[in-house]
Length: 386
Image 1 (spheres, rainbow, N blue to C red):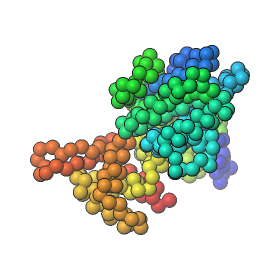
Image 2 (image 1 turned 90 degrees about the horizontal axis):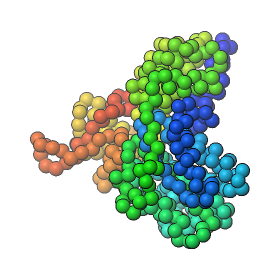
Image 3 (image 1 turned 90 degrees about the vertical axis):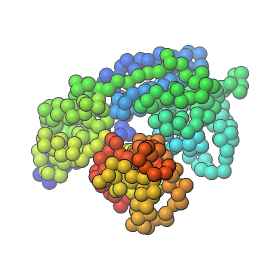
Image 4 (image 1 turned 180 degrees about the horizontal axis):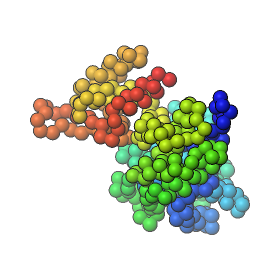
C-alpha cells in the first residue's frame, strides 16, 4: 500500500491476517517437539495418535497445529505416505453434524449439506480415506464448544480404526481449547486421550511478543516504517494477557491509522489509538463466527446492558424484537431466542445464569463481564450494516 506522498507502508498486509501461518514460530519450539514426539508412531508404524493443546487465547495453539500438520504432510509424502489435515473451528460449527460436514467437504466440496445422517457421513469419510490410502489429522479448534454439547463425534473419530483389523485409512484427532476439556469427556472418549498427550501453551512474555512482532514487521511492512519503540509499546500492551493475536491486531490497526494520516512511519500515538478501538474479545474473527440472527440477539443484549449490570431474558427478548424490526428480519420465537442465548453464553460473549435472591420468580439474568457494551454495539452495528 502506498500513500499519496509516495511513501509505502505495507509490504504485504496479508502477513498480519488471522489466517496467515508463518513458517517460523518463535518460542514454540518445545510445543513443536512435543507434537513431533507424539505423532512419530504414525509415520513409523501407522498408529493413529491423539493430542490435546491447551492454553489462553493468542498463545499460538491454532497456528502451531496448522504449521505442524502442513510440515507433517510433507514429511509423510517423502516416506510415500498420504496424510491430509483439516482444521474445523467449533465456534463456527457447533454440532457433530456440522463438524463432520466440514471434514467431508475437504474431500468433496460438492457433498450435500443435508440429507445424510452422521453414520452415513462417517461411512463416506471412511471410503474417501480407504480409496486414497490416506491418514487424516482432524484438528478441532475451540473444541470445548463442541464437547459441552456432545463428545459422540470425537469418540467415533478416535475409534475410527477399530471396525477393521487392517484399515486402509485412519484418523488422528487434535483438540484445541483455552481450558482443560478432558473432565467434560465421557469415560469412553476420555480413554483415548492420555494426560501425557496434553501440550500446554503458556502466555507469551513481553520479550517473546517483541520477537513475534519483529518477525511480522519484517514481512508485512516496508523497512523503517515501524520503529523499535513502537514494537516495544505494543508488546507492553499485549503482555498483560500474553496474547500474540491481540498484539498483531494492534500492529495492523496502527499501520492502517498511519496510512490514513499520511505519516512517514507508525508512531506511538497510532498504537494508542489502535488500542482504543481494538479489543481482544471483539476481533473480527470472533464476531464473524456468529451468524446474522445471533449477531442481532447479541446486539439487543448489549444495548440493554449499556447502562445496566444485568438484564432478564424477558428484557433481552423485548430488545431483540426491536432489533429485528430495525434490520428487517423475522423475529424468532422464544425457544429459538433461548437457544441463541445459550450459544452466546457457551461462546463467551455473555454470561447467563439463574437469578438469585431478590428476584421474583425463576428467570435467567444476563451480563457482559469481559466485553464493554459500547464498542460491542458499534462492532455489531457495523457488521450488520455490511
